[in-house]
Length: 92
Image (cartoon, helix red, strand yellow):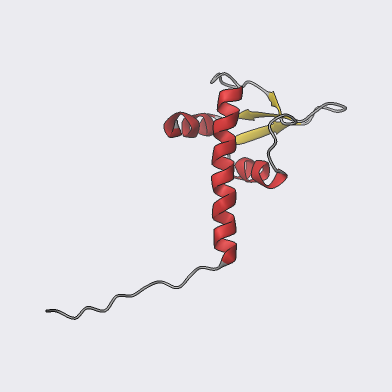
């Protein structure tokens, strides 16, 4: 019987898990926005009723999946980029 040694990688820490969770939340936000826009390109949806955190929305913008529109005196709106729509279609 052969004796093998396994290298188990060390944990990357709490910050790694947090970043992963934000990325997952951003992905689900993209799915939610895709459904809210009726799967149509460049449709704007008010963020107020979606119930997403600012960190989740910011991460989706950083990743290039979502663009924001700030209308003075009104709710902020979001729309999916082409990359965001591709991600949503692929993930559904």
